[in-house]
Each structure stands twice: as C-alpha cells, then as structure tokens.
Image (cartoon, rainbow, N blue to C red):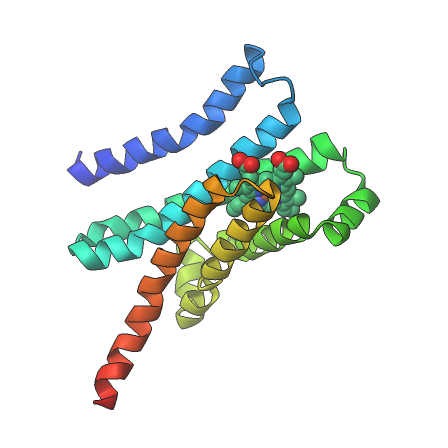
Length: 198
Ligand code: HEM
C-alpha cells in the first residue's frame, strides 16, 4: 500500500465520523433537547466543511507542487454532497414530512431557505457528473460546469450567515476561508493578463 493510499483511506474514514457520531448519539439519546435542530445544524456545518475542503485542494497542489492531492478532490466534494443530502432530508422529512406545498412556501418565504435550496441545486449536477465517464465525455465543458462550485460555496456561506442572524462569529470563519480560496482563483486568472499588458 502506498503512502497516498493510506492518506486517502484515512480521510475517507474520518469523513464518515460525523455521520457515525449522529447514529451513535441517536441510539444513546444524546441528540440534545431539540434533535431536529441539532441534526440540521450538524449536517449543514459538515457539508460546508467538506465544500471548503474540496476548494483547498487546487491551491494546496499549486502552492506545494504535491500533484497527487488532486485525487482527493472528488471524494471531498462527494462527501459535501452526502452531508448536504442528509441536511436537506432532515428538513424534508423531519421538519415537513414530505409536505411539498409547505416546503415550496418555505423556500419562497424564507430567504435563507431559498439560498440553501439554491446551494443544493448547484451541487446536484456536480455530483451527477463526478464519474470518470462523465469527466471524459464532457471534456472542457466539465471544467466549466464544475466552476459552479465557487457559486455554491458563496451561497452556502450566505445561507449560514442568514441562519445565525446576529451572532456571526462562526460563519465569519467560513466566509474568510471562501474569500481566500476564491481569491486564489481570481489571481490565477488575472496574473497572466496583467503580465501580457506590460
Ligand atoms: C434545500 C436546501 C436546504 C435547506 C432547506 C436548508 C435548511 C436549513 C435549516 C432549516 C437550517 C437550520 C436553521 C436553524 O438552526 O434555525 C440550516 C442551517 C445550515 N445549513 Fe442549510 N439548508 C439547505 C441546504 C444547505 C446546503 C447545501 C448547505 C451546505 C453545503 C447548508 C449549510 C448549512 C449550515 C452551515 C447551517 C448552519 C448550521 C449551524 O447553525 O451550525 N445548507 N439549513
């Protein structure tokens, strides 16, 4: 087994810990006095953490020259989607018990829910096109499509910001991370242009 395989499996196992913890707390009755809120917050935060981690892969690769790290990007992105699915399912099943009309009015009436739904809808095509076959078939269009992840990171952060209302201490860190990670991309696009002007 190569060193990288060990890293990959370790991250895979670590990524399952938040889900395993939920199951554990469920069976030990430790989901706080308000389990629905707790599960929603836990899965939402975990989804955002993985989204941010998936955005750190390319800067890490370019800054360190560690090319293999790119092989972790899809896994991190899919874990973001996995936790987003759990998060959205909690809202659909535990909050609304599949009441489509109430869910639709929740999406329309509460701006933070509108942004949560937007984020989720942005992640769906990314997850669906994450297979090797799709990457090959879409070619350059795959790269263009997957730029939607930048938008998803922004909408997810604003969604979080709007959830907490006054106490922005926690979302502030995610916003800072997203701004730094997206600044790398802007810089990489503009740097060659600036050089070509002079
Ligand atoms: C249909 C889509 C979505 C819906 C309906 C939704 C709904 C919610 C709700 C009801 C809350 C809890 C509000 C409260 O505590 O009062 C929440 C919190 C949160 N959601 Fe979402 N969400 C959606 C999608 C997403 C996605 C895709 C992400 C991330 C990728 C995300 C990240 C978060 C985060 C980080 C929190 C805050 C957790 C905390 O307070 O610690 N949400 N969302």
